[in-house]
Amino acid sequence: MDKDKCIGCGMCIKVCPGGVLSLDGEHKVQTADFTEFGWNGCWKCEHCLAVCPTGAVSVFGHKPEESLPPVDPDKGSQVMDALIANRHSCRRYKDQNVPENVIQDMISRLANAPNGGNKQQVEFTLIDDKAQMERFRQETFREMERLSKEEIYPEGFDRASYEDMKRWRKTVRPDMLFCGAPHLLIPHAPLGKGEPIPDTLIAGTYFELFCASRGLGAVMLTFPLNALKKMPNIWNRLEIPEDHYVGVLIGFGYPEIRYARGAQKTIETSRIHRPAF
Image 1 (cartoon, rainbow, N blue to C red):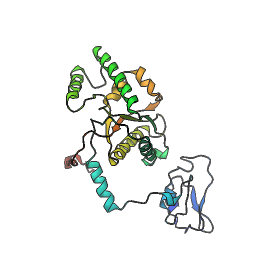
Image 2: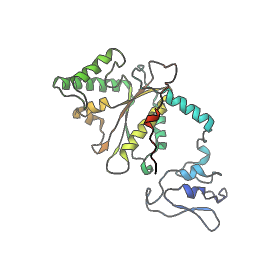
Image 3: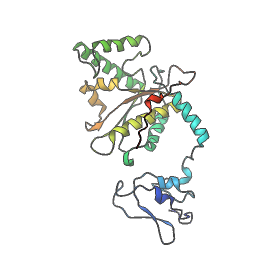
Image 4: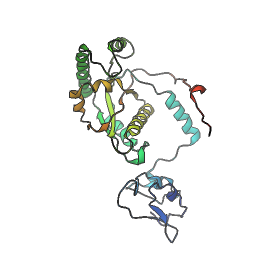
């Protein structure tokens, strides 16, 4: 706390979920003692740093002057509307690696995505090399084909639907498992504490938007997740702890096909429900 910059407005106190901030006798911000980070102490949310109008608060080595500024709503809404309308499930990719620094930057920014109690429990299993991904793809496909001969299919599929997936390889989906993506990201989090299910799905959703904003294609995958659950010998090699929740895989890379415009989907009014109290 920079006492010289603090004007005693109390805004940081009002946004501190841990309730560890208060004003001292000089009407300057002070921090209470606490024994742990989390529910009974600082949540590491950095709201105090973000809200202070004079930049009097620094936390965890992060300085207010190094923060990104707020977005102008008039400009931000247009960008977000266009970004969401122009994101698509990408099912064809270039045979090209995304630079490591680009991937790392996107993943690091997921720390700002919403998560229960700001516990930051989501971990990420990443295949960031297209050669490694190709070996993983081929090994998984061979095992899936072997299982299909024994009439063992991913959950929700039977022989007819499985053969449909194979036929689509001639048109929209050359790779029925991972859509040809050169990279794969798997968010996962420990069960039994926090909010692992929404946290992992939110992280995946935000990552997809990061991809869209950087000209990358992405696709949310559940079919290969269900397929891999039938292949413990391959799944275990991903080294995801047994007590971790996994809800989706995200394939990503440079898209082979560029879209000329965004979609024009809408939500019908019949799907909006307004309860009365």
